[in-house]
Image: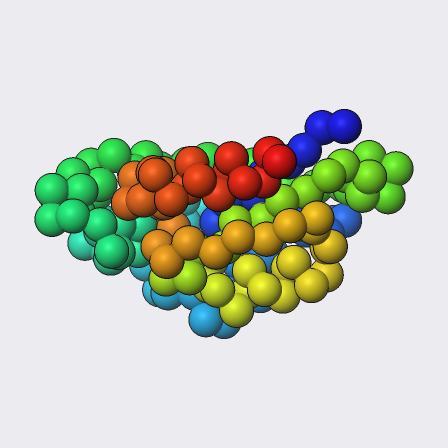
Length: 148
């Protein structure tokens, strides 16, 4: 059986888009810093907020580097609803790795998503949104534990 591992990620219901899910997360800190250029169809994160949002808990070196590593994204895929059904997404084995200091997808919203879409196992890292940068060893341990 295939397993999906969600790391600091949205866990959608049928008809959700990334934008619609983000709008439901009142505790996330990203909203005021999200800039949408409708004419160009581009979404961007305010440069000055990138380190706090994506590298909170990270080293000074990472916090200095990350603003330049984040790219603007096309709005289309972010606002396109996904369609998941009980016969595809619903039957796939799911693991969720929570990020307890996340500013982009709040811990409370992560918990609500998991409550709405059951997963086989859950792990929690004491990191922000990018544990692959701020705690790669902890993330690797969680993924290894999920594989058992």
